[in-house]
Picture 1 (cartoon, one colour):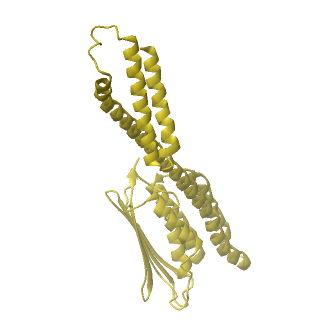
Picture 2 (cartoon, rainbow, N blue to C red; picture 1 turned 180 degrees about the horizontal axis):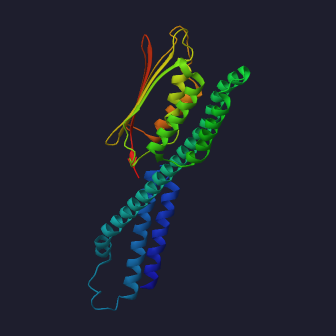
Length: 300
């Protein structure tokens, strides 16, 4: 019966070849017709072979050729359909896995590209401020340059990680606020309040918050009269992180709503905190510009 088993294996591989040729190209009727006919042909050949070699066996002499065909055809058709289902499921699973992996690679590449834009954008904005002070030959410049160096060091090394401790990110906000505080001095009325525990185990995407702080100072510096007013608070309720920023702004000035920094961070939020893992609300009042960002954070 070795020849019969070889024929069975051959018919199985022939079915897989038919699947790739016809089923994958959506020629379903052709696939099923040729596939079933090939298994019927195999069954007829196998039965004829058995009748030829086993015709002298007493236990086989009472069998009729047609009865043997009818008794076995249902099993082979079921095997053919089972083989088709397994191939369909396997190809579908591999395709979905490949597409998911490809999408993840694309998202990772996009996030890395967006992160790489943050440091130049931040540096550009900060150097603009430092340029004005250098023209004035301000004594604030050395201290500002030192703090800028610390911030850039963070942006170079910490952003290589997908997530950083939330308190490390808060420290970066504090450093940037100190930098701006030195520059503005008496022209700034600032209140920064953070209730996040010092030993919090929650993680956050690096440099996901600083753009909003930058924007607060950028909007506020165009105020015609009076000091720059900025209120910042960060809270953590279980895994829900909330950043709230309020700043005064020049209502007569039309600032661009499509700055690269804001577009960048909004896209990062969509990728890193999809679905309902983040909520960003930006509103303009008569006096204050308000940003509220909520993130669902994960632990170490």
